Length: 283
Figure 1 (cartoon, rainbow, N blue to C red):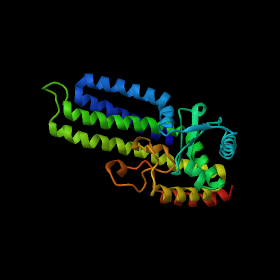
Figure 2 (cartoon, one colour):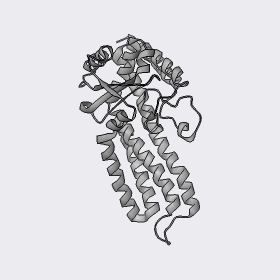
Figure 3 (cartoon, rainbow, N blue to C red):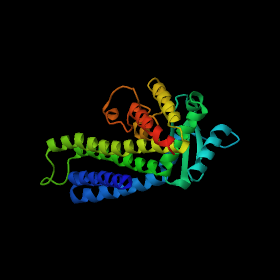
């Protein structure tokens, strides 16, 4: 059901992008938009992981350079029946973590120095389990493609308001184009938000099952939420916020981009984990 739901949402984003291209440039614009959508998806598939790791200055580590962290990832990876992902540490004292990669064989997990400083070993294990759950179900690839198309929709909608569309006979009414500039990014953000939020809940549940201790992730989320309301990761970008276990912009100044958060509230996530405790205790 989740796979079908996500596929429908991604197709909706792509069709919205193509439709906007048609409004702006007629049939030619629609064809160009379709080609651009394919190109963006192809580029995201092969390069999004490298770009985000480079953006946050992530440094790859191994067993010798980060034994504690590497051992946790290795142990959980074997338990989850996954290939060993690359492990990175981000030189930033604001605690957070994310996973990236297009498939199981090209996956990576990155944590900040702040996360390793703030959390105890059990909490770190819960965070890693959460990120492995994303890798297991290809969540990062899907969310990255959704974010890429959503960003492109906002860009082309804004661009269309300046250039108009089609010829003099089929050019949209200026009022319609202004409405398009507002509604199209809004619709794209809602779809992207829906994709990301449902997968955060699912990753929390899988992490609780993998570790057998929902309370570890509850504690980690509470600490990360508290700290992230007071600090911001260096170079943080709204376009990559969906990747982190806690939205880096939590508690920051309100804006249109923070209105449609890609994460459920931490309180809701902790409450859902509480409901899992009884089920897991029976297993």
